[in-house]
Length: 465
Image (cartoon, rainbow, N blue to C red):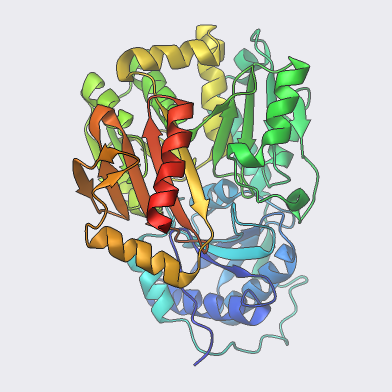
């Protein structure tokens, strides 16, 4: 029995050269090929890779497998973002999208994401079906030459995406607004789009660097200290946007270099779409998203539903119901009018449009949100533990062994995906094992940043005791 390939909350990911190898990429592609051929007579695939090491090589090996089964392959010759592949899959009417990416994982990882014909993550049942079809060994496709092969079709996914942006946004309003914008690509796949659409703004880490400067390309504060300091010192940026390695996650900064987390971004988007743009629809959020979303949905009379973590669990609702917004704590957000896919750059443009149309700063808009929800502060700890330690903590959660943390008494618990503890004063805590990395994550929200930090440290001491 070979290495077991398992898709997590968002694709299969593994360390390059140890488990993420050309042989295993071919195995996954073989399973995907069999699944496609069971569903369609003449299927087609769109495939792209991000900025990670070996992306082009892994793309070509995957393409050879698809082509060996007579499956047409549309490919991007240069690095692209995950939303570009998803949009391309929809617009080219292909049956599957494949992205060679490990998203926000550290640079030693690469990964393999699957996208549906509708332009979003493949649904869980279909992913499970593909997994069951992955063989123990890879087929030999060395005899296939991709150059000039009729089934290997180069496609400009980036231009398709840029055309869609130009069609859906009034970029002139953003260009001509009094606000100054900045962007940190984190050496990721969003850099080409921003270099093309906003060449005049302050751009950081918009060069190719497969090592991501030694920092995991996840748009959270601890990974964006340089951007934060640049904004604070230069006083040249009113809103800074950051996206992750494959540009499907978002992080924001205000004009003081203060980080604006995903929960605040989600609330800003709901407020803009409903109050200013008069849109309606259901809000779908993952289990780790702020409880303040429920409060805002109640304020606006919107239906709200909570899902397990992983955007694939949100996508199904976006396909079958009238959904205004679907979102995760990780910064993956999708909105009505775009594809059912997380898109960090797209969400950034919506926020910039919000500022440009209202003439209000990011902080003024957040104050509008606070008038509805009340102020709050969120943070997260990632604990690198042994498997035994992780299992012990999760087991204690399951057995309801924790009745208080840091002097706060647990009032109720939920276990949709991990263990969420609720306390007085709208404080909450979530303990969950990561689905993509060897980590135990602890999420918490209180009324202030200082209180949240203190609470997280108290929780850490409690679970490790």
